[in-house]
Image (cartoon, rainbow, N blue to C red; front, side, top):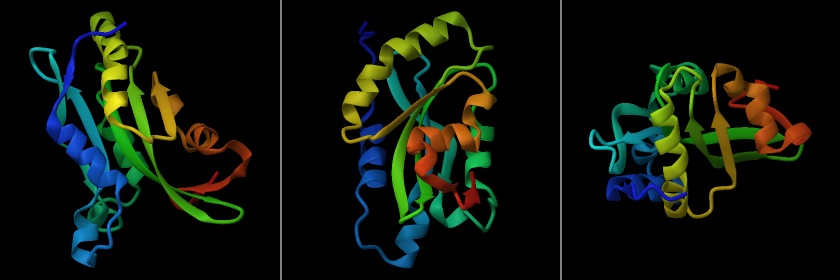
Amino acid sequence: MASGVQVADEVCRIFYDMKVRKCSTPEEIKKRKKAVIFCLSADKKCIIVEEGKEILVGDVGVTITDSFKHFVGMLPEKDCRYALYDASFETKESRKEELMFFLWAPELAPLKSKMIYASSKDAIKKKFQGIKHECQANGPEDLNRACIAEKLGGSLIAAFEGCPV
């Protein structure tokens, strides 16, 4: 079911910047986004970047000790959101970084909000070509490290964001 919701150009630009890792100076790397949360505009017609809801790579280890825990804490208790998270994880063979797409639809969100976010998900996913990992979370219990490791590769994942799983 299509909702007719548009995706703002800034959302597409942020996705592209997170997906394409150019050779960068250390200063440019610090400004790269680790996580970004998106919401619907006030008129519910466009998916936009939620103001102030991002984590920069340069903040990790400086002002933010646990980037994933901080990311989960940025999600609202009583409303839906979309998000991109640049996940760092380790398998037994290698370290990887891959983008994850989240649909956050908590139990306490209004039914109308859940419906519009669910029906608009295809619009944003079409703009996010190449996302390998998708997660719908309905509460904090869906966003623990073990659940995320399962989405990333199950028993092959040894650590997520530097923590063993």
